[in-house]
Image 1 (cartoon, each protein chain N blue to C red):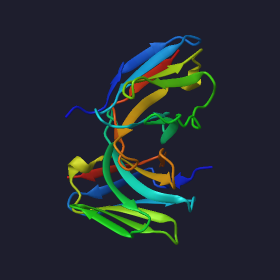
Image 2 (image 1 turned 90 degrees about the vertical axis):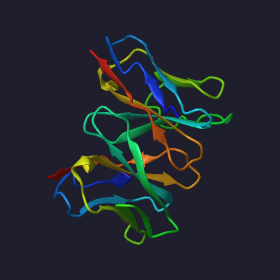
Image 3 (image 1 turned 90 degrees about the horizontal axis):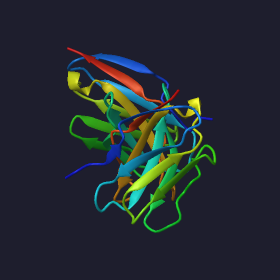
Image 4 (image 1 turned 180 degrees about the vertical axis):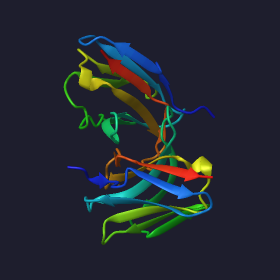
Length: 112
Length: 112
């Protein structure tokens, strides 16, 4: 079946602009996660949605970052007033349970 | 402070030999550990996992060993194949948590 998809695959934006990154999880997966990977670093947790529960936002680095998950499926990660340190690959994952997370290909964000 | 550490940024192995990738962690509340493989420009792919109640899990050429007293786990690949060349990430999940905490990765090169 179809895996996790993300769009766009690449995004170049000017400092100060807002960006929206989209994630389509695997159908039926109740949990959805956002991570980011900066150059030479491991994956850094951002936010976690599980069913209808309130999301775990403990990994969001600042209030410029927010995410929504509509209808328990598609999710959008929004970064307001982007800064150069926001440049990274943003990865979305979904899972049926809390064990194995399946990742999308990521969105490479470059802030100039 | 890093809770999951992969101290070797790279490893080179001859085809057919064993590859051993190591990972150390500091949080005794981690109850589930996973290894992911990542090719360039792709999202991480789940490889193998182990619960904290076990000390070994095997799947084909891949075996993960967990030493809780040493807070150490390792991934053994035998025999290694050139297609195994990728970056390998160790990840851990805290008890009751949903998100994963990743190490910085080890780049494995398997030479023909």
